[in-house]
Length: 401
Image (cartoon, rainbow, N blue to C red; front, side):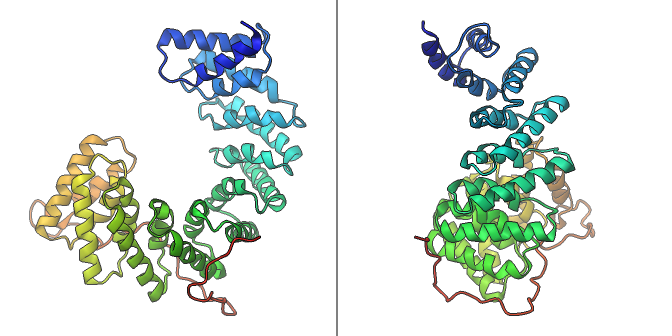
């Protein structure tokens, strides 16, 4: 079989996850022969990319694949196609410390020379989400990302740079200002459904300061158009968690959440609205009763969902459920614990269950519990020196020509 034909066959075979152990071994061995140069190949990257994406490689094969990949990209900072190898390399979480250092260093060097090109986003995306960067690597990646955004402020792919930047803690005031400026500029251009991927981390930040009004206005404008879509959870969740909403904003957010739940309560994703909604300690009696009722009904039907913990985390600390509601929550929590004992926050939820007023064994006073669960709290909104202009009600951000 011709080399180019063999490469074209190997690529889809490497992407398959349903091969038996022996077939997988033969496919991986054939791919290694090509990327290590023992068999001629028309395009090693064609085989190397899917090989790097396999997470079932044995220790020896993994070391050989990573070594071959590094040999192909180190020192090739002027070659745009190196992105095809750097991207899956950076996405691997099983690199040893030395290989990780080499991969990150090579990626940063390549980005220094490719930062003005559109395809640099393919390397920036996994680099910005990679854990355990050194402070120097972290600072350098941030600088490169901001430079890329300056050259491509309206690129559709900027969402993959803005999202991890907005999710960062510890940005200094100047970096925060630059990131927020780029985010708002991009959101003005992309008043589309995918804007939710930028709005979510934007609304989750506690350092918006004078930009808070603009962020909230942009979120509500987006909801005017997409409030009933499944993806609205990305905006409603962080919006409901904020504690700096004005009364009218709070009422609008809560009403929008209930409207969304009317359509999507049967989905697993409803947990991402129910949890934040129940976390609010400023709901009126009617809204509180409705939210609790919806959450209990949802729990009865979705105990197998991974998202259950977001609802339990808000329900378990409450002392206003009544005997029947408390019993339903306790039963749901115990069932869920049996199925998800390894989930990270199981201990936190178990403590909340044991601390419940309703389940205290001796009927005496249990440890103090709060009436609502408190997720990440956004500090009160600071007042700017001059009023921040509010958009005209109903005004929608237009797509720039």
